[in-house]
Image 1: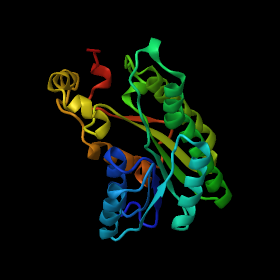
Image 2: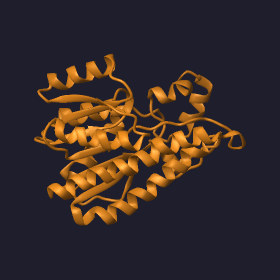
Image 3: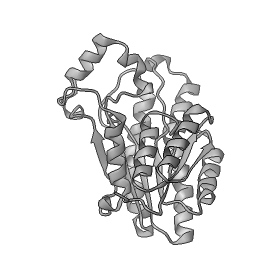
Length: 256
């Protein structure tokens, strides 16, 4: 399947986990890939090799997406890398655990800058490019089930994802005349490095799985498949939506 033949995709935070899975999935379906992370290391080298083995092009651009100037530079460099940019997957994100009464301003800013502010201005730069070049574009934001359900001790994270939910809906309307679609993917409990603490706590893990009707943790490939759908022309009439990839967790959730 070559749904992304002659397309270029930028995936932020793609050194590992869901971002890496998205990069590999889009490349497998024909896209050339711009990878991104804080640093270029053996993970990036391995991904580039895998993508090039598929016959696609790949480049890694370092940038901290919590820094607006760095995000703008990232999009500009992504555009010039292979002569264009069609798909922006805003995957980079983080969470910092803290009781609400103990949250530090620095930690709040770090979460919000990474999960919302950087995405805001990254989409803006991408949209300016699309408008200038008179070309359609697709944005897929990595949200979370916590744009919808509570997550005690992660208030800033939930605020950032709730904001992303509204940003996506607003931009879907505002950018539609430019031919730009904007959607969210909201993973639930996925086996990724960010969930390593949960994965190593068998007792807590079983509590979480009991909340998932499908009865298992999600895989990064489960998320990448939905990202690929939303980025493709198969979703040409889809914008402003959130697609939950959670095994049924969201509407079956009980805080443990």
